[in-house]
Image: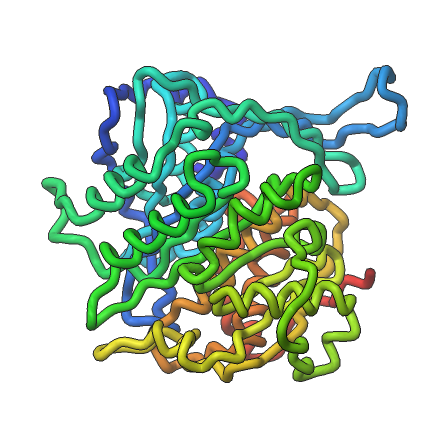
Length: 431
């Protein structure tokens, strides 16, 4: 059953029971790896979560006190951990080899139980989800306007108290076998979001947490990709916004953010000039944005994935080849470790022809797709920055399409790869 149908019978999720601070031991059999681009490896999607109530088709008159209308109310599992996990699980559902895991914190309530059901139905493993009997699950209300854009009203609830120690406790659980498991496969990527909305996982605490995650999940034979997605970057105090992220950049292999967030985090100067683009793509970005991307690299971030909305996305690879080599291992090298230092490329956004657009989770989908491609291990498909960005844009394209976002008619990762190889891409969205 698809996620859209779950939303219409949401009370079925209330049967899940929880206990204080334990990992759920439920695993899904409907997960898969991107077999044409790797030799296996699970992906862990961690961080903020909330139960979203989407009000689809909202009118927007412009008056604060106007009575607005909407077409349909739909629940979905929201937040970074939820959106990335469900996107990847649906994308890789056809084969049943590797898993997508969720690490997030919920309470023993309707919202938490409902999210667990969404994860399972999508095909993501819930055994690493942390339930705290003393906590409340976060909830959000999102008006999805007729233009396809959205608003957001949220109570962060237990995300406010989610600590690095609790996160690392759940990472340790990854290696604890349950009765149905022969043992975990190597983890290929750890995706985390949104640090600016998680007060206990910012700055030095974020750096230490990511460093410990890398140490726990990596080995000489296997390196794990650490990717961080931003949201909720408050521009009212740029010093606070910067201090939440900048100290951790040396531990971040892929950083995803949008133009507004990049400018909030902007430093006053950068010691080196921005790199020239490979394809003239730098003309899309201001000199201030290019300077800030360079600053991220100077602080140790390997790859910056910048969302440009209807203009697509910009991928910037560090000019430091040694930083990329940190992701190589004795047994297999992930795609990103082989990328040419200093590469910068632009990838377009793709048009949804029938016009049914829902942009909720678009950035999460772009981030998830890019991290999947960048962390690939095999050699059948050449995962260069341009291919990884194009793949990510296709994943976001499907997620924004109201007809395919919940799985029905969604192309698999393999099918998207074929579209790129055969150059059978959708029409480019004109800004």
